[in-house]
Amino acid sequence: MMLYRATLPCLLLVIAILTSRSVSAEENWFATADDDQFVIDDPLAEGSELRFVQTQPSRRGRPPVASLVEPPVRRPRQPPLGGTTLLARVPGMFGDFFGGGRPVSGPNGGPKGAPPRGGAATRLVKISENYSPQPRNRIYGTYHYFDDAIDGSFGDVNRYAFGVEHLLWDNRSSFELRIPFAHTLASDQLDDPVNSKDTEFGNITMLFKTAVWTNERALVSTGLGVAVPTADDVRLFRPADRRLILEVQNRAVHLLPFLGVVTTPTEQLFVQSFMQLDIDTAGNPARGDLMAMNLQPLGVVQDPTLLFLDLSVGYWLRNDPSRAWLTGFAPITELHYATTLNDADLIMQSGFLIGDLSRRYDILDVTFGLHCQIKERYSLRPGLVIPLRNGDDRQFDYEVFLQANMTY
Picture 1 (cartoon, rainbow, N blue to C red):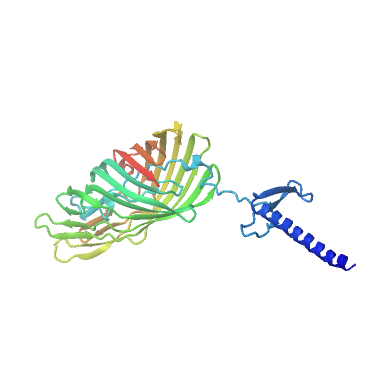
Picture 2: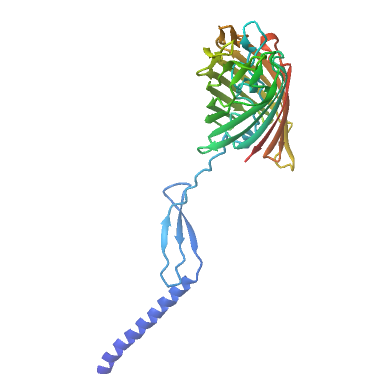
């Protein structure tokens, strides 16, 4: 009886040891096993599922952790601005505008003098020139040749511009900086008559643009440009002794609000348009003295408010990004209209005549261009502008240009 009582605890101890070894072996097997995943249908929600995940334990022998989790939430990828790659590939407009009416600054009744505002020879800012309603990352350069500009008073003008546009705020806005200069009438002139030419720096323009509405086929944007007076003042000297008789200071800041629309009715056809205002906020002060003794204030020359309406239609003859070099080319035709909303200033004081002799004008030009897309990042864009009106509504005989863009 005593032997039985001693044997029973020993037998229970042996069974406990063997059971412990069996559990350890089972844990070691789990430690070397791969993760297992089981999908369990949820009878409470049709079409949904729950996922049973068995994670792999660490080598230190910790038991595996099993959890019941919901299926991962897949967030939709944000589409590119404009919704489609086709819309994003629509090239910008070409442009057409030179400057304004027939400017004059000099003695009343005498020969024409220098332009009545700084930077006039490098022309006012036209939003639609090499510009798109879509915000973009790009660097660009442009060249424009104007034949017999402003009824011959400016002669032939070679205008250049460099700029950069950079995306902001989730790619729905952009900021652009334009730097223009031109070989044109010099800012310093002799009144005998005016014909001196030089390379002149223009007024720098800053543009902010944001997309306010978009879908897969169309985009609407709005923005504001600010042209700051960085060009030289205009000065007119007496021929005999080269003494200063007239100075028109470059002080005006121009505000350029605009609205742009771009759409792709078909895979090949694209249409875009701009509506823009040009508002001279302060004008340019003028000082003069025919005797060249003491220049006195003559007044302020303020440009009229301008309204621009632009329409562009293009058609892809080739639009294949998979090609090695020339991935696309499209002929583009544009119609441009510019009009004054009020009379231009004209100062007649102390023997001087300063301002715009046209007072009001309505300009209508047509542009023909070809957009050549090269390896997705580069484009070359030659074109021709032909005026459709005469007299004060005709700024030049014709214009030819070349625009180059690089996206980044």
